[in-house]
Structures are given as C-alpha cells and as structure tokens.
Length: 91
Image (cartoon, rainbow, N blue to C red; front, side, top):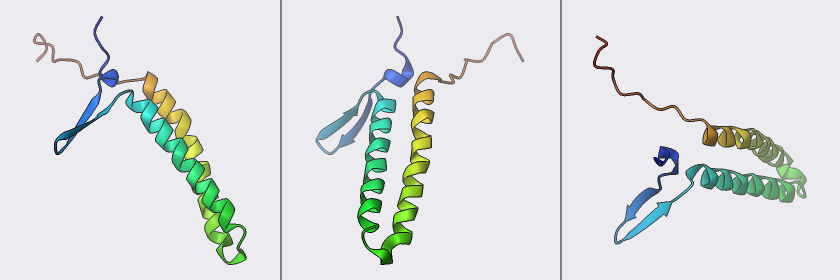
C-alpha cells in the first residue's frame, strides 16, 4: 500500500542537525491550540488592568477566530487534492 503524501515526514536541515516533523496536520493543530491558550491567558491577565482592556478584547477576538481554524485543519488533514499526471492521449 502506497504511503499518502501527507503522511511523509517533513525534514528540515539545521546545520548538522535535522528536524523531522511527522503527522504535519496534527503538529499544526497542536501549535494552533497552543497559540489559542496564549492569547486567552494574556487576555485574561490584561483584563485585570483597565488601561489594557481593549488589548485584552482583541486577544480574545484573535483566540476566538483561531477556534475557527481548528476544524479547518482537521478537515484538511482528511482531504487532499492530488495532481494527476497528464494523459498522453489528450492534446
């Protein structure tokens, strides 16, 4: 059975080291969740100071928008568009 292209690891060379990222969509989803948590934590702290209330509101808006990204990442992990090789009989 052929391996799906999305399951192939992404390898980045960093000098004498290699960073290997497997299950890319899962890594992207985890990173997204991490940033959501950061925005909401910072926003919650900023709400303790009335002068920073507007910044807190914007962080909550950004975090909420990222909640929309979560199902998009999950959907993209299941749907892939693959380019078909050209058909030699078509001109």
